[in-house]
Image (cartoon, rainbow, N blue to C red; front, side):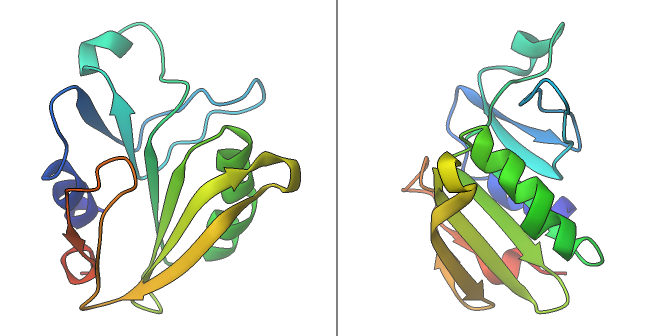
Length: 136
């Protein structure tokens, strides 16, 4: 998770911050704690409340893969999170989900990237991240 946080932090422009294993108040019935989330605004903007959205959420999955692909992904779609990544440690790849479609609780665009591939978050297209940099 530290590798993911450092790679994403490295491409964030001013006006955004990284939240690591902290709550997102995305629904009345739950506040997931994604491994990494990109939040608009400064850390102090959330001194008295949890963020209610994120531009990017990343889960690092080993034994939690079914949960991350199921209940968590559906919750992020319902919340309108525009981009969701699952770093799949057993398969050593990055699952990228974009364009939430809340009515069917899925993302319209899904892609799997492997070590050696690079990608840019949709919200920060000039920032490039190597999948290899995310993997332990």
